[in-house]
Image (cartoon, rainbow, N blue to C red; front, side, top):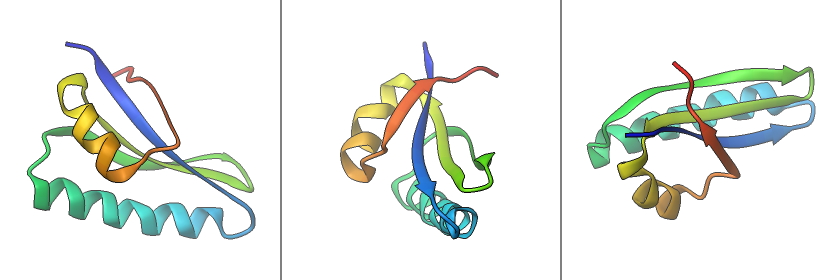
Length: 78
């Protein structure tokens, strides 16, 4: 089974805080919807570009994608 990383991009001077706040909502969704996920997190791509992400098995992706509308996705590398 492939593993995917769903990504939400945040840009600008408040990108870090916004990504951290979005991560709270991702964790709430995972808990409330009982989604089996690998991990969640925030990454800094530059001073003004941060991402929040959710890694999961491909089978769970369509429901999460439709509910949370990630900006993009990629294969997850452990």
